[in-house]
Amino acid sequence: MLSDKNILLVIAGGIAAYKSLDLIRRLRDRGAGVRCVLTDSGAQFVTPLSVSALASEEVYRDLFSLTDESKMGHIRLSREADLIVVAPATANLMAKMAAGLADDLASTVLLATNKPVLLAPAMNVHMWEHPATRRNLAQLHGDGIASVGPEIGELADGEYGAGRMAEPATIVTAIEAHFAGFPADAAAPPRPLRGVRALVTSGPTHEALDPVRYLSNRSSGKQGHAIAAALAAAGAETILVAGPTALADPADVTTVHAESAREMEAACLEALPVDVAVCAAAVADWRPADTAPGKIKKDGAPPPIDLVENPDILAGLAADTEQRSALVVGFAAETGNVLEHARRKLERKRCDWILANDVSAASGVIGGDSNTVHLITADDTDSWPALSKAEVASRLVARIADHFGALEKTAAPVRSDA
Ligand code: CTP
Image (cartoon, rainbow, N blue to C red; front, side, top):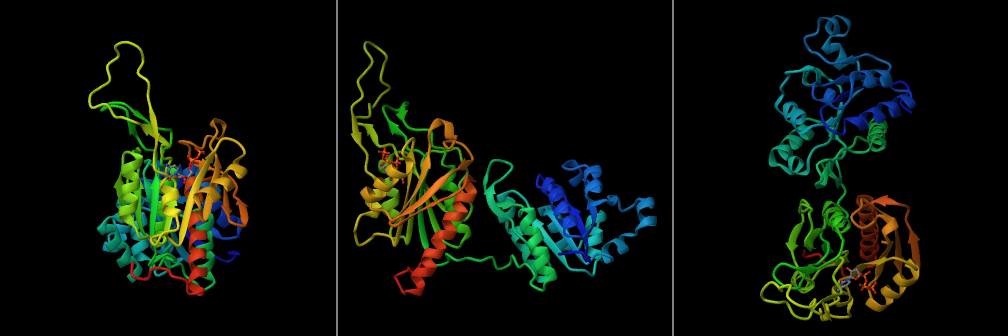
């Protein structure tokens, strides 16, 4: 509970500002007093009226407002709080804080305060990864400022990676931890898969009929890319072999682009040895027996297409060879009898785990943002609720981390030279 605590919430300009409204509600529910400073760009995303209605306090906006200053000078504003929370903390505001700039009410309050500060950064993945932001964050941590998040997931601009503001519940937990004497420390995020080398396949493959036509499927690659990003965030050295997708390469992942099943297989073999392989790609099972060197012309009857089978990449990686990974995970995309087909697939392909999902048209999984999966192992089936593909990735990575943690304890061969 936060009943005797006063929190000054600085809301800067980012799409995540809408989550700050929920944060205010949660803090008030716990009995905290919440006073808010809204920057000009923050006010582009949430209205002063909704902020003040939720906080039951007026919103402070303007450094040079006589009314604001006479009622509550910025020095008082910055000193009367027990904790200042900046959510969302934009790259711009973090840069100003790191440089000690004070050119609006938010940055002035943050410079004038003698109270602890907690940041909840939110920005595009490339801004988050930019050396300038890394430098600023390191400086801010060095100045004793704590931070929570950001999380990995789909970002407002359609890209994937780290940059999503921590969920309000997570920020509340960090605030409670702060008051309990355990400050959040994003400078040392848990990296349970450090030293582990991971391979992920993702997306569809294109099997050429001629230079302009191909056979393929509707896979978007969202799930595989999410898994690669989550593995990398957990500290794994991650190689993503991506079929043709519209997605950006995830941050901190070595991405190899492959067009056909055979190219994808070659890229996977090239990546070996790895400790864990996750095959999320929707590899085309067949390819045209011949690829015409020139565009097939539409003269006469439609040409017959002879198909030949593609290599099964998952079965190859799971085969009992010297290079077999300690953990091989597959997917089973099914449109009926999901568990039964998936278990048979696990046995047939000899992988260790299989994530089974219903990909029938009604499920909306293919191309969509959520997924309902069952994690099937040799002796267990764990059914997860409907989750975003990012959450499925996080859960899977948590299970992988547990698995390697358990292996380490029994001294099994986890690569330590990676
Ligand atoms: N897979 C693979 N290479 C292939 C086909 C599938 O690596 N040529 C992998 C997928 O990445 C997935 C798993 O095998 O992890 C199951 O794919 P799925 O399409 O569900 O199964 P299929 O083997 O194609 O079997 P079926 O078409 O009978 O469902």
